[in-house]
Amino acid sequence: MAKSKRAQAHESLAELTRLSNKMRALDREAMDFGTGEALHTFEIHTIDAIGKADGRTVNELAQWFYVTKGAVSQVVSRLTRLGYVTKERNPANGKEILLALTAKGETALAGHDEFHHQIDADLISELRDVPVESVALFNELLGRISRHMDRYIELSLERRKGVAA
Image (cartoon, rainbow, N blue to C red):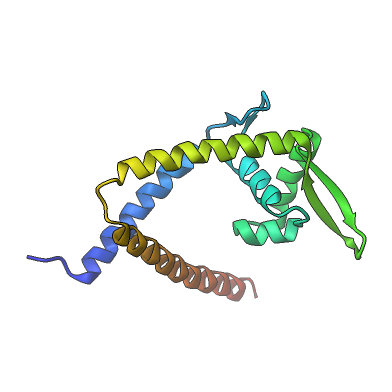
C-alpha cells in the first residue's frame, strides 16, 4: 500500500534531519585549504561569501548565513587576525565596514573552490543513474521545504517575542 503524503512528508523531514546532523558532524572538522592553517566550515564559508562579493558587510553576511551579527563579527575578527580578511570603512557611509580578502584569503578561497569541485564530481558520479529532471525536482522540493521552514522560524520568533513582552 502506498504511503500517505503525511507519512512521506514525515519521512522526508526525518531524513533531512539525519542529513543535517551528518553535515554538522562534518562542520566540526577543520581543514587546510592551502594556507597551512586549518579552518572550520563557517570560517571558510565566510571567506567564500566575502570572496564572491568583495565589499560585503557583517550585516549582509549575517543575513546570508541566517545567523546573528555577533556570530559573524567573531569569525570576521578571527579571520582578520589570521590575515585572511581586511576591513575598511565605506567612504560613502562611514558607519559601514566593508570586507575584502587578502592574498592569503584568496589562496584559501581557491583551495575551497577546488575542494567543492571534487565533492561535486563525486556527487555527480554517485547520481550518474538519476535523470537530470529528478535532480531538478529534488532541488525544487528542497526550496519549498526551506521556505516552509522559514515560516516556522518566523512563528517561533514571534512566539519568543510574545513570551518576552
